[in-house]
Image 1 (cartoon, rainbow, N blue to C red):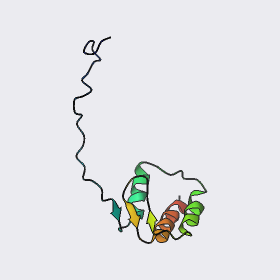
Image 2 (image 1 turned 90 degrees about the vertical axis):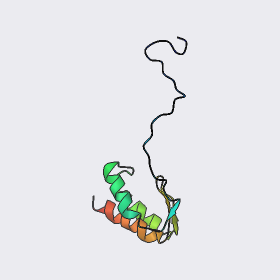
Image 3 (image 1 turned 120 degrees about the vertical axis):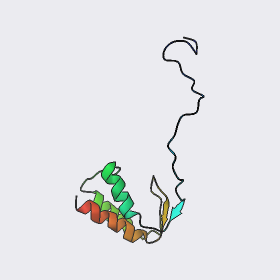
Length: 93
């Protein structure tokens, strides 16, 4: 059916309402453990398997100074402590 005809047609070029959000800072030196746990509680992004804790501890052993999570700002700081904090959380589940 040609565009503009039928009950299902719509103007795809019209702007869609989007929620107003503040842009995230590209990097942070603030705590990322508590926010990651809070997001994980609402939307599990990491499988809660027996391998979660040891995997995070192995990564912590690399002593990273930068962690780039999939969502959120890049963390610059004591990556070893941050990853161990996440490992502690997953170890209690």
